[in-house]
Amino acid sequence: MAQTTPQNGHSTQHGVDRPVTLDANNALETPHGVAHPNVGKSIPDIEAIGDDSEPLTQWQKRNSIDPANQVKLVRLSHMRYQHPDLEEITTFLLDFGMHIAKKSSDGERIWYRGYGTTQYVYYAQRGPKKFLGGTFEVESHAELEKAAKIAKSPSSGNEELTEAPGGGYMLTLHDPEGFPINLLYGQEAAAKGDYPEKVIVNDEVDKPRVRKFNRFTPGPAAVHKLGHYGLCVKDFPAQMEWYTRNFNLAPTDFLIFDYWWDTTGNMIEHYADGDLVNKDTPVAWNNAGDESLAVWGPEVPKWFLE
Image (cartoon, rainbow, N blue to C red; front, top):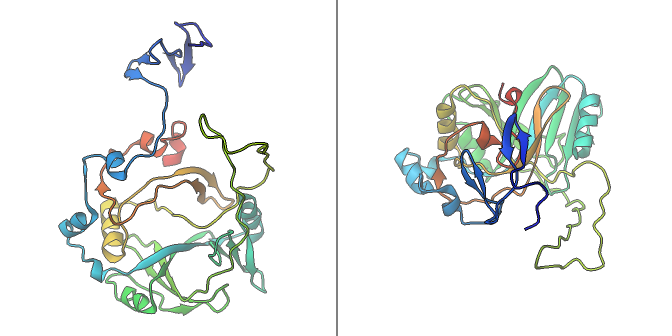
């Protein structure tokens, strides 16, 4: 086995002196046990989740959640924000990978899109910094009417989006902590944009890329669509109960991502290669901690959680 350091080589990592060379059995003794080379593979969701889990239908029954009463969400459509400087946030969002779908005639409202079939993935209006909520498309207009009846959730009424690309009707609710959530129906789909060409990768066995060289042009990571958004809440159990009881949402999290701060101080991220789950994927429990937020990257800095 080729070695780049002596068998007893050491290196300082995160302020700790650690051995850095694998032994003849391709293993490394550490204070936490034997470490082996990193190996990635795709495994069934049940195997990855582990035993501390239960089927979604069983979890819903145990929590007295009736799917028939839930508002049926189809997909996550776009985010809505208010920014004091639209020119500055536009520069940021273009560098982030979006492009302008439409700008209002007075310049006070801008819609930004990706290259998917969603009319826009981000809406911004001029004004003091304010979070205007994530927006979900619902199954039918009747679902908007159902949502308007959710108890303890003041709503804005059905607003016709006459100025927005694709049109549609939107209803705004507020969760128990006051965060807005927007529900949309009737928006026309946009024409699909130009998808980035897939990069062909050769591995140890399969080598489909013959006489083709991978070359990359520096630039923003093109945004496809809106995948998810998150909230920092005070009462997590109450918030999760409200969202999973009133909407066809289930507890889940998997993703590869990077985080940015926009020019107004909001967090925004790119994500890729998210795990795809469905109604058959069990609900699971794992210990929460800094390390669980950065499975693929370095240790989470303290300021991230402040």
